[in-house]
Image 1 (cartoon, rainbow, N blue to C red):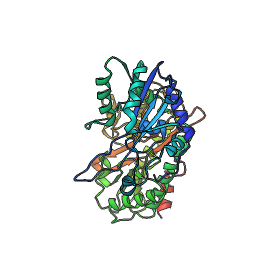
Image 2 (image 1 turned 60 degrees about the horizontal axis):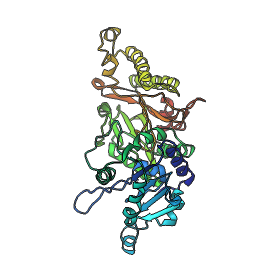
Image 3 (image 1 turned 180 degrees about the vertical axis):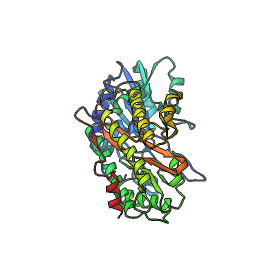
Image 4 (image 1 turned 90 degrees about the vertical axis):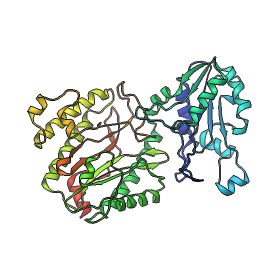
Length: 428
């Protein structure tokens, strides 16, 4: 891995937090992600399942974590099953975790090779009353491939039909939402790498450059700073492209007078950052562009005042809509008559601001957490309002990442310029 080894204390603590939510005499089983094929003998880069990583720090394919706090055998309260390395694997793929290294990374003392799993794990399952298994229950998930977790679930239910099955995911969504201090540090490192990427771009952009050239500059800076790359597909959208919310083609030339909307973030140690900035191709905003930009920035800052522990996200987004209504009226984009006659299920402001304002962030850029319960302290959220004026070929979105706290939210991107003067000064 490109990143420095993480402290095993984080994963030991995460497992203790998970264990506190288990029913008595329960066993929980977590699988790594698969390596997915492309074509012929090609494969996609491996990306670990976030839940097994969160609980163990193991960032390797074909790994299984077993947690059984009430196991009769004291050595089997926690087990890691790993792919056994060989001289052939070492030559073709490189180093894999040894048993000693796996313990050093995870704090799990009992390590077996994957080939031993059936004879060790199945007697343990017979000893347990409840089996906690993992599935992808993310609200935005569209699962079209069968994961290793899904295959294991089917096999387990076939072999052990009379056990009581429980959802590990429900626990994981709860405990992963609240970030530990080490996690905040890792997200902050990802944000710092993102800052370096933006600074590089501010010194690079000029009329005539192409969106993909900007993407290449950011990529260079990310990998140079021990990031695997982007935490999500980057959006580099000049002019009217910025009005396409998930524009990722990044293949247009940037023209003088246009504004470039850039939505990107570095990943560090599997943790995400998420930034959006808008910059003028020619180095200076027009007055109209400034007016729209400042409207978005005012909404952003007002969102920060109300996004706090105890807030319900549904109530929060209603208030954000009210902030945006006023700005759009002042910009002449909607009228008070439009608001009076609006469809309550699709308010008038949605014509120019049609997406959500905030989401959880962590191991996933759209991280897990409850959308029906009040916000917990020590969660990390984005704030990202935007105004998209298709008839003017102008889209402005401004996004930072914040640690939510009763002591006042911490801006994890406070060193990244966001004010118009700071952007223009950096470009000129």
